[in-house]
Structure formats: structure tokens, C-alpha cells
Length: 203
Image 1 (tube, one colour):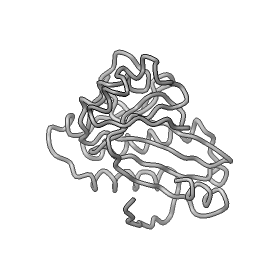
Image 2 (cartoon, rainbow, N blue to C red):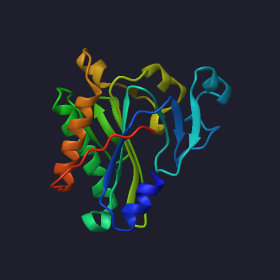
Image 3 (tube, helix red, strand yellow):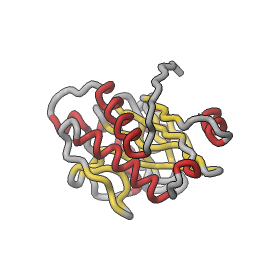
Image 4 (cartoon, rainbow, N blue to C red):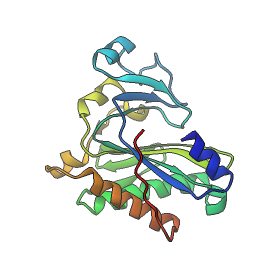
């Protein structure tokens, strides 16, 4: 992502990177290991097959893993003429639109409860970084991850809320590619991209 960020910062076209990760707890700027937001020890996480990584994004502790679509928009906010708050709200709106398109009653968050929600269940987390007017990091959408892995953390530092997924809400299987396509289409509409070019690459 660093190379893509540098390229966009220097004038290349914006990019939207899509991925699924191995089981990992990432800790953003608002959290630190040893605080209550990471409830399990490193040893317990290792036994569960979950890695721990610090990250320079905003936000608190979150989980990434198979069955979760992670979308990293790398966008020149200067070219887009959009501020940071409006950008985050735009990302939430993209996810809301994509999930509503497959029948999930998703709603963007509000101040103090960022992300995308289905009632009191968080279905997508948002955490971004803006450097030199260019965004990185992005959104993580729970399509069909192992929800028990979220029990190792307080997701995004918010006590008292559950985590949900597309498959849990719909009660049926959903193709990851369908969610990917809907997210890309919503992103293009929301931020005014006339053309979208797909490129498949393995990490």
C-alpha cells in the first residue's frame, strides 16, 4: 500500500485495494496493547492463530481475517476536494449502499459510533489515515468471518455492542465477489469516478 500511496500522492490515479487477511488483531492510534480494548494476551491470541500488529491508522483495536472484505481506498482528497470527515462519512455511505443492495439493513454510524451498523451490531469498521492529502487504510466489512475471534478484543473500543456479519444477518451464503463488486460500484458513484479498471494481483 505504501507504493500505491506514494504514486497517488505524486499524481497517479486513485486506487481501491481489496483484500482478505490472515487472522490478525490490529491496534490503531487510539489503543495500546495492555489496555482493556485487547482482552486476550499475546500468548492467548497466538494459541488461537491470531497475529497482533500495530498500525498507523486512526481508531482502536479491530480484527481482520478470512471472510472479511477489507477495502483500502488510496485517494487524493485534494483532487477530490473533500475533507476528512466528509470522506469518512462517504466511505460509510458506500458500505451502507452496497449492503442494502443485498438485503442487509445497514446504516452508517454517527460521531462516537463510527462504522456501519445493523441495529446494535457492528458489521463494518472504518479506520483511515490521511497523509500529504492522500488517504490510506479504509473499511473492513464482515461478510462471513469467524465472529468468535472478535471476543479477544473490544471492537473499536466500544463496550456493550456485538459484532455481526452479512451471512448472520441474511441467514444464507453470500459470494465475496458480489460484495466486492457492489462496494466498488458504490465507491465509484459516491466519489465521482467515470471509469473503473480492475486488476487481479496475489500478495
